[in-house]
Image (cartoon, rainbow, N blue to C red):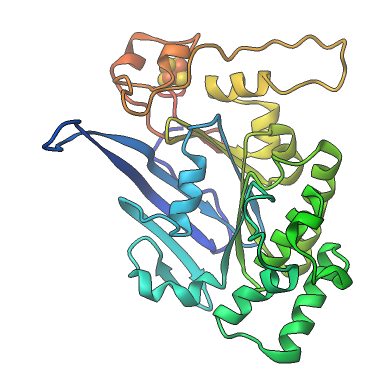
Length: 335
Ligand code: SF4
C-alpha cells in the first residue's frame, strides 16, 4: 500500500471524474441573509469509468450518490473538480463547459430515472415521449423518426402498436422500459441509471436489470448504476464505489467488495443484505443515524457509528488510498 489513489490499469476511460465537489450554501434566517455554512453533498469524488463497464454507486439515502450522478451529467453545476468525458477521439471537461455547449454532448450521455411514474410526461403519448429527444436534437424526422421509435420500442419489449397510448395505460415495468427507450433512442455511450429499478416489484426488477445488461452488450453502453439495493448491484456491476457523507469510502471490483469488504461502513451495509436462506441469521451491524451533512464531525464522518473507531479517526479525515488492489478511505488500512 499506500500511496495516494492510483488508477488500476485499464483501457482509456470513457469518463474520468476527479475531485468532484457539489456544495449547497446554507443562509441564516432573518432580513439580511448571510451564508452560515454549506452542505457538502459530494466531496472530492474521484473515479474512472471504462468503456463498456458498469460501475455501481451505493450508499444510504443522503450519501451523495444521486448528486454525484447529476453533477457528472451537468443536470446540476459542480462546485469544483473535473469530469473528463472521452468521446469521438476528443476529451472534454463537462464540469467546466459552458451550458450552451453541452447540448450536442447530451446525445451521448443519458439518464434513466427512478420513478417510472413521475419521469414520463402524462400528457404525451409514448410515440411523442420517445421521439422527443430526436426532434429536439434534429436527428430524425418524418418516417425515419417513426421507424426509429418503433425499432427502439420493439427492442425494449414494448409493443409498438401501443405507442399512441399515454403513460398511465402502462404498468411500472412497462413505463421503465419506455424510459429506457427514450434514453437509448439517442444512441448514447454513457448512461446514468439513478435507482432505475428501485421502484419496481422484485420480479419486474429482474426483467429490467436483464434488459439493461442485454442492451449494454448490444450497444456497447457504459453504465453508472446508482442504487441502494446491493443484491441488484452485485448482479449487474463490474466494480462498486461505496459512498458515505458525500465521499467515496471504498472502491473495488464487485467480487472483491462482496467477498472481502474492508471499510467498516461497507461491512455494515453488506450485513443488511437479506439472506435467501431463512436459517442464516442476519447480523445487522449498521446502527446510529446517517451523518448530518450540515454538521459533519471532524475526522472520519463514519466515526460516530463505527465499532472500530480509534482516536485518530476523530481528528484526521482518512484519504482514499490504494490497498490490496482496491481503494479504501479508513485509518485501519494506513500506516
Ligand atoms: Fe472507523 Fe476510523 Fe475507519 Fe472511520 S477511519 S471507518 S472511524 S476505523
